[in-house]
Length: 253
Image: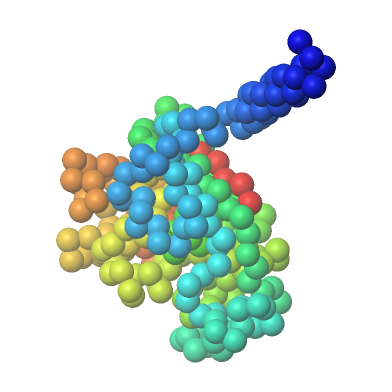
């Protein structure tokens, strides 16, 4: 065998081996990459603020920036100010703007696609506890250090949201932009345990018959076979009560 030909054979083998090793390492480092599919139930496609929605095994992966699609005074002095800034025009006479401004993040919400009641319930932490239809995170009923929202509510903008110190905009209570545009009976999003969140109206009436987790079970328009679901109300705990009903997934940003 002449030397040039042998050299070409060895080079080809090296390239092939290197490629195979690269693929293997990618799968080892990111096990979900090998099982990701596009088999996403239609209900998740209602999350119109997502930049990506995929299925990975038993989980739905929802990626968002967390930047709201409505205007806010908290867009002041940001890259979105020209199109999205709007001075406060709500009804809270005690309103005052907090010093934070909206920023963009790379959120990934990982939710179980077939949520079940947890045997041992877990508390909600500070930070995102779910994701709304426009990609903005839901937070629980507490301010920092699990303080009541008594003072913090005075910094909510006209759409009932505000940014935290790092700029992560979120809703602790009814996302009024969504309930105005989608309806107060509509799906509002999902919590990390995979169970859906609905608005404050059901069958034409304000919801009142909720358990301590702020939800109940029956059929909905999106889940005609029935499912446990949360409701947003005007009273504490607003979105969620004493922990998750199911086992929470995770989020990263």
